[in-house]
Structures are given as C-alpha cells and as structure tokens.
Amino acid sequence: MYEAFASMQGWRVSVSNSSKEVGVSKGYKLLDLRVQGHNCHKMMKCESGVHKVIRVPETEAKGRLHSSTISMVVMPVVPFTFEVDPKEIKYQFTRSSGPGGQGVNKVESACRAIHIPTGIAVFIQEERSQDTNKKRAT
Image (tube, rainbow, N blue to C red; front, side):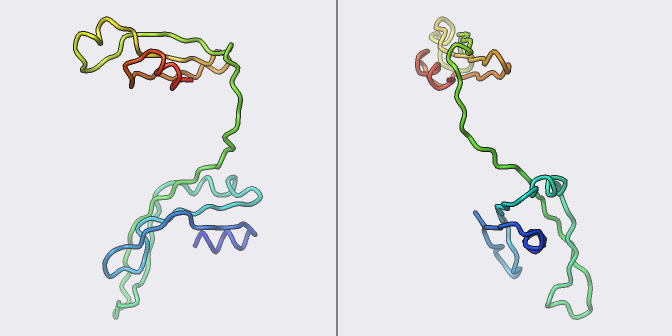
C-alpha cells in the first residue's frame, strides 16, 4: 500500500531489509522501506503507529474478514556530518557504579562530556581507564 502511494507521489522506494513470514501466510514479518523524494517525511510522519489491516484471504470460502495489525515507524534520514570544537566540551570525572570491587570506589574512571552550547551530555563508564572513557565520550 505504501509503495503504491510513494510511486503515485513520484518518490523512489527501495527495500533495505525484509523477512518473510514463516507458515501459510504470504506476507512479511519485517519490512524496511527507504522512501526518498520531495516532502516525503512531511507527508508520511503522521503514519507512525499501529494500524489495523483487514483482508479477505484467498483461502477463505465464505468471505469472512481477517484482521491483523502492523506497526509503522517513520524516521527521517539526517546527514551525519558535523564538527565539534574541543573548546566547547566540558569534562567531569566520577566514580563508576556497579560491580567491580574496591577499585570502583576509589578511582574516578567514568567520564561525562557536556557540549556547552547545546547542553547535550554523554556519560561513559564502560572501560576501566579514564582516558579510554574520555575518548569514547568525545
């Protein structure tokens, strides 16, 4: 249905990931569509959510309706190119939480990197080394 709508709008549609339903059904269990075109996100963003699908299967002799649901997520593709000035980042070092014995309580290896202009913060405590956590947070 969405492929037909996209083609009517003149958008390009490609399937990036799919898996067929196992069993008697001829449908998909998962289908990822990539839609590209003018104003496609603006027109499709309200389609996110759960939809009820009503159909009459080919094997149904008495014409009864079968219903199922699909969940749809519409996300824009944003280019991931940006530069962050190292002078705009403030670092805070704290003790890590979780298991790890006495070393967790006395070494400040966790790093919180805060981008000052936007206020976006990243907290990393995965490694034991403060320098490694600082590099991963940046």
